[in-house]
Image (tube, rainbow, N blue to C red):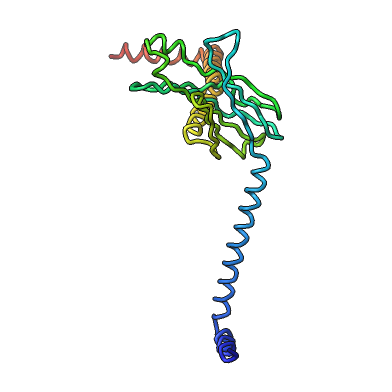
Length: 229
């Protein structure tokens, strides 16, 4: 054993071999540090993870309505990022509706909100019977910093719901499109103001004395040119 240690020591004393060992040790240290950082981040995220409970119920005032109660059972407020209602129709294209009016709404801790998920008007227009439909209700929530996001999908037919971590890609695309529309409608009045300002500036420039004399001079030159021809 001592001979092996001596051989390793001699090998380590050779030029460049110590650097190889240092690189290996540093790489292993980086891997361990990365694992510790990821574990710490997961632990911090789990403390801020929104916790919801979803129940289906019937309203006495609206016996034909379909409602779900979303309760924030966690210790921190939850911000609503997306609400989607889906009606799966047997043999036909499903109906989907994203309710943007709830976007950025906050559900305080230990409080609840009520949502309606029915498609009575659409089903009546298409003459589709209720027994051909299956519903699902999806709500995407996050903490106040919007860094820890969860998607809850509730199935009223079975009374069960599932939770998935992270924001779904469909919701990301909808948020991107919504931000593009928001920026467009915000910039549209500014573009109109710029056009009106440019038109006003041109009208003011045309009413100046110098501009009138230049216009008369150019008109006389055109008349002379026409007379020569």
